[in-house]
Image 1: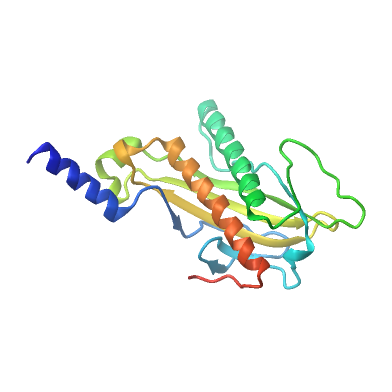
Image 2: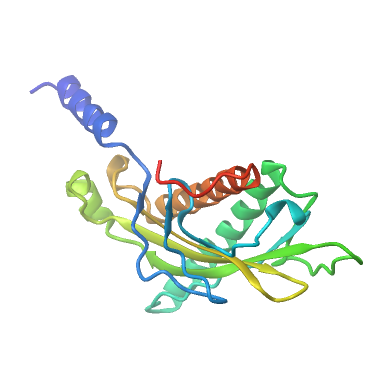
Length: 216
């Protein structure tokens, strides 16, 4: 088989199977404030919403740094987890600012913010509950069969800062398994977290228009 044909076949596999992250069913979604994420949504994963939650009432949102609560083996894993948590925080802030839903998006990992009198504010907080780096070698040799995939899950809470009440919870899980030459685990996980942040902003835009969570 010629080199050109071999390359063409490899490219065809990537076209047919796709690259990067894919949504997966969240693993043990976390409940908070009496809410459990059970409603399926095509962008946010699983969602639980307080009956009286009105997103339009909030013009300010603060984004906290999500700690990684998955099992970490050593100092190298802890440094890697800190890098991923910081990246996710930055992407959430960026995507929410780009959404145009709020007058102010505050990165609470960098600064504190106290609402002015009469100003309603949400705080987005949560945990990175899954952070699996997978195996680059397994992705290289059998990634199209699901081997060596990375795993990321974030369980999020939207909290009314004036009352401390949880207004909405979500759980979103992504896997990534196909990339050229196996793919760097950091790059694949960053893509997963960026996709989570992007799709959360899209879901909030739909929610702001009065749309309910939907599978598709």
